[in-house]
View (cartoon, rainbow, N blue to C red):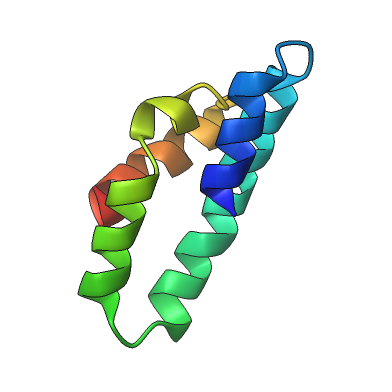
Length: 78
């Protein structure tokens, strides 16, 4: 899902900023599920790293809260 949003952002220049922000929000939801509900954490971590690049999520940062979340995400998944 996150990778698809990023792909749409790269195709739609007019709304790419909003799509990158939404991808970052979805990454927040993913991190919550990853921490609380995933049994195979190493497999999910590898899948996330293979399909989603941190640089794309970085483009969605729009506040200090996003910066701190991005740092936490890098520590947990990358």
